[in-house]
Image 1 (cartoon, rainbow, N blue to C red):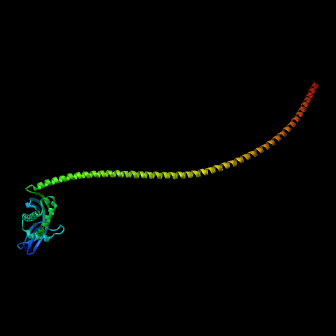
Image 2 (tube, rainbow, N blue to C red):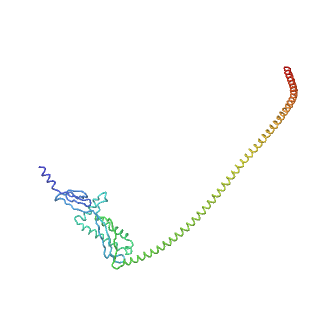
Length: 338
């Protein structure tokens, strides 16, 4: 029993889905609901739904034969990027979407673009009427800013926002802009030539100034280098002088010490020589005394030897005589035996 009732309850509404770049507006007995990037239920007969596209719309806006401040008629083309104000990407602004739905819900995309295009073209033409051709030609950015200032309140009132606006072309049938362009071109060329000449002149001046400054700097550097070299030479000479003076002082001390040492050596040598001479003299005296003693002893020995030789000779003569006597006696005895 419950199954047929459940099927009846579920078949009383439809499920609708919305992509991230579109809004589904559900209206009916439950009020108005906006669904972006989600889904919603729509009851039959008592609720309805429509879609609003939230993606960018690119509009080509052309103001033909628009009159400038000085009465010159021009044609101006621009490109605008417009979208429904649905939030800043982090938070969805449902009130802005509902505001856009109030004006454009149920309309085709082309109808919405046409309505916004008319608003844009009207403000574009209005701003053209406040400026001269020269101002438009020279400063398109300023023109774009003034158009944005005028069109933003109207677009906000419709739930839209102007994402970008760019002037693409400015032209006229009378050749005014062409002449202005030629004049501007000639002026630019003249200014370019003047600028080039001025720049070249300034470059030459800068180069000459740089060379002069370089020469001055070089001279200053040379002078400073010469001063430093002289200071170094003076310092070196002073250092050498101090060194030589110290060396001379050291040498003087060495010479004095050497002289003292040599004098002490000479004195000691003289003393030693005196001692040697004295010793030698004493030795000679002693030698003389010894020689004297030797001479005396020699004389005594010679005397004794002389006396001994004389006695020996007498003994020898006596012995010889005795020998002859014995020999004579022996010979005599032999003869007696015969």
